[in-house]
Image (cartoon, rainbow, N blue to C red):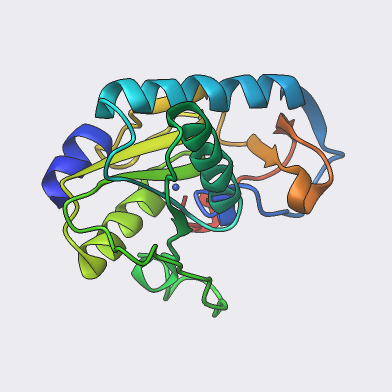
Length: 216
């Protein structure tokens, strides 16, 4: 399964917990809007239809998000899938902390929450959801975590933003927005549940966590 997922599909504000984490800026941050609330909602609707087309319906779909913002996006995506198909689509969260390849490089961090639907993932089509795809290292960690939980038939990757600069041969099956970035820039996905607003912005003049050994 892992080979299939890596080759075909394949990080959370962990890509995402790191990619959306606040880092000290040497100069005032300069933000450029990429997606607003309406854009973000339309992107999720489009991705939901792509998933249903690819999976030929919602049967055996399980949507797992990488905390924190990936989990929120996964719940929203599952709700749209359920609304379209008229059947429940289970969603949950997948913490990758103990599978990270930078545990010895960074300060100790609290474990996140893993919540796998009751029926498990064996034989399912798992849609792994994250907010920002960068180096691919968080997705690699997520694939290792999935291997320890069960053996899905297929793993697909859906991300809100793909900002490039991959360090591993991982790609997303469903992408909300491809954004050309420099390593000295960051992409922030902000969600109303924790940020008070739905938007995606490009932040300049802010060192990227990857430049200081972060896993993204």
